[in-house]
Image 1 (cartoon, rainbow, N blue to C red):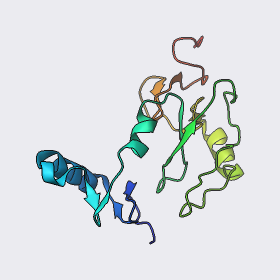
Image 2: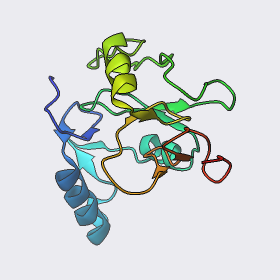
Image 3: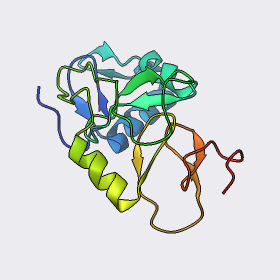
Length: 154
């Protein structure tokens, strides 16, 4: 099955759900004991596959917006602060994300003054506001110098 743009969850049977629909499915399952655990095509939707990522610090996700799968943990000390090529490759068969970030995107980001999260290396653009950034992986850092928040000298 081909993925649909903007979907968040793929069930074991191969169907895709956007966030609104999957939340409705889970809410219904929580209200009716007969419907729990939530299912699609009579197959249980495992919560454990999502659960393992939520308690993890220094999370790394697939950089492709239509995928954004949890890839694992970025180990401390295995990244420099500024514009390094990614070493994570998404294993999902329906995601064709290259192992290395496109060099032209890195060049554009560097030229535009964008920062990258020191943990997951997500490219971040600051439109307005303070330099304190909280990335979606949970890391807090200074936008100006990409150092961990509260240890920078900015």
